[in-house]
Image (tube, rainbow, N blue to C red; front, side, top):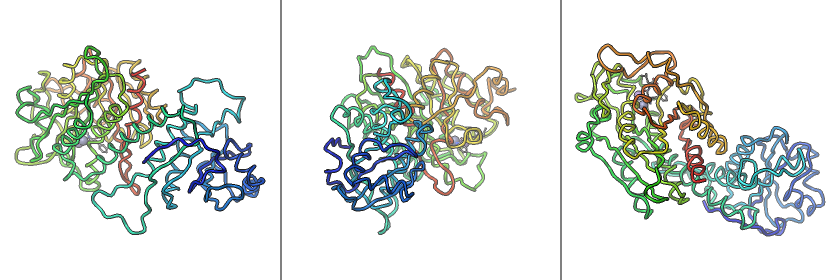
Length: 504
Ligand code: BES
Ligand code: MN
Ligand code: ZN
């Protein structure tokens, strides 16, 4: 989708559709006020008579408004000003994007970023230039959300005749000085699109080799991106027996994909993002039940979001160094598969008793974490659909953030807040560590019923000692189950915002 800045007077603009917002019981803002004036108060009358509903997320399409050149006007209800926070604003933009799509609109002129609750609540805010809630932020979020709302999976199916075309381009009612906001939006949108599409692709297409192909594609596109792909022999040389064990039951051989982006001089320490890339998780010999198993294609959601954030970073040419390490494998039962009872010697030298082959994510990640230390990173963040327990704890609204480093955890939570791709912290106290005690190895790969997400992170922590490391469990946030099932692309927003903040 193309994002354009267009600051010409909104009533004279010959747009297919103008998109404005309106609060409950408050004076109209910016462009909405101009439209009301031009139409002799028609807009306010429609609101007063309840023909236009200003309740939060309510959408009303108006046609042929007097005094306005645009053919249609979409009025998005923003609800009560005092409740209008970042999350509510974000949802209004998403609803607008979905409504435009449902109503066969292929271009639109958007004024939603004018919805500043502060001008209603209190006199003009003197807040920071780029923090949440200012015009830059609102513009960026509007563009990203309208773009995401127009995503439609079509790769392996024909579009139905009556399916509407997605929006092809949107303009925003703002001056050139807002170009940086749209640039950021373009990067974020690209990252989200990549991650969402990879998450939705079927597991017979999106294999470890396919993820490696995508990495090649990204490498080819940017001069300052390089790529190493480690295949089985190389991983065996490095003694990555845990990762290799998980991949052994599948004919789709595992890969360790290492994407490097250089946006700063070589001596500058990189951020390392590590992604769980299980392209299908059957559970292995500890086979999962059949119901909903098809959805386990999303078990590479962590890898997808890491790749998406990498692409966003490269698109924005952020002045940082970034390395992405993707542990890609397929967890299948097979005569050659690893089994419960096996003791694996990880790359770190620590031994692991396999209790359950369905706790495979931590096994591929532990070797990827050990490997990542060679880059002497400023921070290592792994992202993984690691536990069902995370979905039980936080549902689909938040990613779980776990770290022993309070400052790093706070940076990630803050980034999630500003990207409206939120995380929530769970403790990573050593109190939980004894649950991993094994009679036959240095540790076992499961910690029992209690605190499943935390014990999974405790397991990983043993492979990130002395590192500034955080773990993000995105099992709930990256994928929505049930009726509207599909990939969300998350947590690309959180990760990309973190990288943007690192760039300063
Ligand atoms: N990929 C799953 C985690 C998962 C399960 C995410 C359901 C979303 C929904 C992971 O590999 C897994 O199977 N974890 C097990 C761990 C258990 C065996 C300790 C789980 O959560 O059940
Ligand atoms: Mn599993
Ligand atoms: Zn898994």
